[in-house]
Image (cartoon, rainbow, N blue to C red):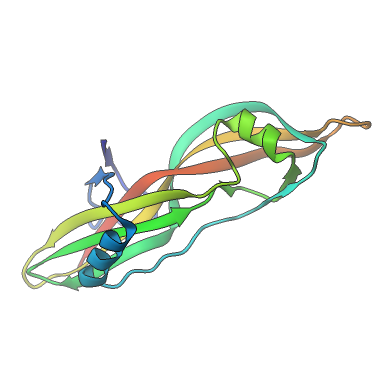
Amino acid sequence: MQRQIALRGGLSAATAAILTICLSSASTAAEAQSSAATSGRVAVSTQAAGKATYYAFGKPKHVKSIPEICGKTVIAEASGRGPITLRIDETTSQSTTYSRSFSVNYESLTAAVGWDVTKSRSITVSGAKDVARGKYGVLKAYTRYSGKQFDVYRTVIPFERIAKDVKAYKPIGVCYAYTAR
């Protein structure tokens, strides 16, 4: 699967590039890690603004899809002075992230959003970018998420909303940002 992503945010228009996202998988995690070790430095972390805690009587309602987003935490990075080809090959595990903390029944939430919110997903980061002679390039990878928005209601008396406009994001791939100076 390939997608073109136009980067937004902290990069200026002059330094932002449109890169092709290629979701591919190595035959083993060890193969991906050995490739990453030769490609430059790699930083792996997760992004979470909130967390879901188990509450047997919390149920999501008014579930709707929201646009895909790129995470803000760098999951892999390669840098170097040209002429060089920066390469990132890394496999990382990412979990569902939330816009805020709330309490919910996990089974109800899993059924409402359409994926198992208790399991992590393996994401393969594989990308390359040529750096011109005399330039110093930095290639960064971020987790790409699809999401759902919902409210959480208590299903016992009193029947009240306990969280509004919660967003849950499922990791689905990778976004890249490239800068050169």
